[in-house]
Length: 353
Length: 251
Image 1 (tube, rainbow over the protein chains, first blue to last red):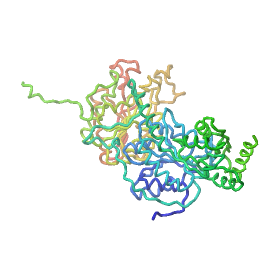
Image 2 (cartoon, one colour):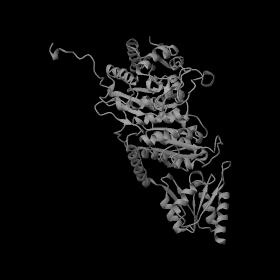
Image 3 (cartoon, rainbow over the protein chains, first blue to last red):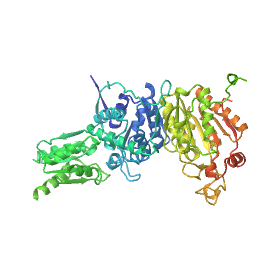
Image 4 (cartoon, helix red, strand yellow):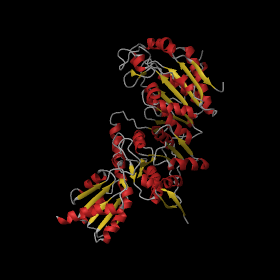
């Protein structure tokens, strides 16, 4: 039977990484994700792994690039300003097709901002973040259990697509303490016929993102674009009470868990509302959102920012149903009651028309 | 004398591929590539070498060296090499970086990789300019030297004086070997060869971080003939950047 433990969300990520065979961690301290490097510093050395506290976020993502180029499973974690610094390396990982897992337990910005839960990094995470026409797979857990499970999945997806995978949480997701079932990882490690190990007995291998010859870069970008299109099948989302919902709420991560209670509160009042919670932010569950829009009277997006994911929802809906929005800038965590009130306001407004 | 009696005294190192390079006439990169490749052969580590290419004229080493190579972002080679070496401690790992890469944008990475005593070998090519981008001022540009971004000559009061990387790194406890060499004449070339060999010994014996700085000619961006550039290395550059071994803890 799988073991159950009571741990912080951040620890669940570290445990998931180790379960998935990650033996190389490179990082730099920043709140609110310090439990991850602290856990790794204690648990990697005894199992023959490497924990390295780097001189900067830039160095840590490039150490990850180096370790992962040899075929090893490697991870780095940080929070918003640190993730900005890692964007250079993430772009190179994507361009050189080197897998890697990057955790963003985001803070609130812009600038130094604060350490409150926030979803202000949605654009940065889902739009690539760094330079160039690339995509990063983005997973958005909303419980400690999902932190563990999605971290394991992140390593599999990174290897499958030879692409960086980002886990996007926030202070709430990282600091919350919940029971986690430690499911053992039973897959075999994938063979990597591109990994750098020295060219003994084979031709030399090269991992690079520079393409200067005529037409080469065009070809490489088309190749990457086809890969990103293939990633569409990795879409994951959760639906809650949507079967008969007249109004479908869309929220991810920390809001995605708070709002579930709001749905219960509203259902008790006879409001037929449901929740669609994207678990993959890239690929975005556009088809599911579109279907919800075709079935329900309206959609409402709720985020801890002033409006980011709502753009993806509107792109998916393409005007077939109205999309309302409630956004909260960083500074406080909304309660289920508060969110229920905001939804109820919109419910009444829509029915008054 | 019959043809069969002739003994071959000189050949391309096995670690170098038989391809033309893109380097300008009189550039020292080709010679430095050769010195590194000779030692890869001599130590018998070709099959387990992983090179880390940097950004600049040196990036194309992946076309010239017959070894596995990963390309690092500008300045990050020492961090990338750290990741490679930690994951593959039994492989031979070297970086090859120019002065813009190592002494400007990559100073944090090189200083900390050196200070941690990463068991890698760093080949640093100092030609006092950003070569590939068209000859802009580098941290190693000499005082008064005219470049495309110091058209009135480098001024110490504005840009500071050139940074001496080999000396600076040799002060760090993690560094086992640090030397500066040149390949502008046969005498210096022989010394350079010995220094590269020593730098390799540090890694193959697991002794620690080794750093070798080459003073290198860039006739194109210096607006000199190959001969003038070669002389400039010996007279002007070596006057400010003294040749020699600054640290050899096992010596």
